[in-house]
Length: 193
Ligand code: ATP
Ligand code: AMP
Ligand code: MG
Image (cartoon, rainbow, N blue to C red):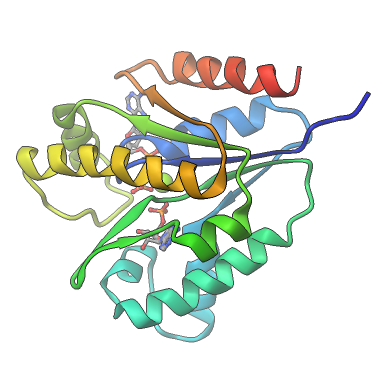
């Protein structure tokens, strides 16, 4: 039987639960690999001594972020695992404006087979950001978050159109990570039973 390769690109606004959902999905999926795009950028940024922690990445000049983004895309595109999960962002809130996380050159390097947008209500995302002490998250209000949620769908359709990968929106309800993970697994099983 021919085994279909999976390259599942998981996206969503900060604090929505991407890492939580994708870590749990990858650990449930035998022989898969998970790569966090931001971690690959961070490692390179640390090596170059441009930054000290991951939440400084999005504050750098876009020109510098683009260099790290290109390096990360190249490294990830070289990963040969037959099931690869990529934890990343559709856009980054930078001091120079919203900047695409999956522009043409990145999405063509990643070659996604599936694009998965994790979503939750704005109040829920706000409370997740506030409760999580592990990150330095931007303080934005509910209205700004709502516009980010809309913007995410718009960037998602572009990434899907450019790459040809199907897109899906998955709601990550409060206290129900397992359900979100199971829905994602069910969809991916359609491609790779
Ligand atoms: P970032 O883009 O900043 O990396 P993220 O989308 O990866 O954010 P996580 O770090 O996975 O978000 O989650 C943010 C916080 O929300 C964490 O404290 C996590 O434990 C919590 N969380 C995630 N999903 C749920 C859920 N379904 N119910 C309750 N808490 C959740
Ligand atoms: P994360 O842990 O997923 O929040 O990633 C840390 C940081 O990496 C993000 O805040 C962004 O600055 C950066 N990052 C992640 N994915 C991308 C991407 N596709 N393009 C540009 N920057 C990214
Ligand atoms: Mg994360």
